[in-house]
Length: 106
Image (cartoon, rainbow, N blue to C red; front, side, top):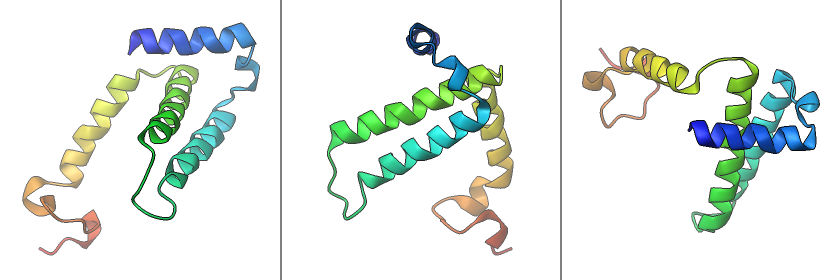
């Protein structure tokens, strides 16, 4: 992902867009792009894969920008969150179950 991050940062630098990229604005942009991704599935399960990929790429781009802006390593925080989720959703309680973790039957 280093090459992807470098290219995204270069793209923004060439356009002098960093001035607009506060954490708040990036968070808004992530939400907007995620809504556009959801729009691809708005009325049914039929979707255009190219459109979905474009919107997914937009979400990922903004996530990479947010991680850079906050000076955090995306791989590190994703792996740390995965470890937290392993504790929150133990296999023996969560496997094949969509119930929220605080609704598990003991």
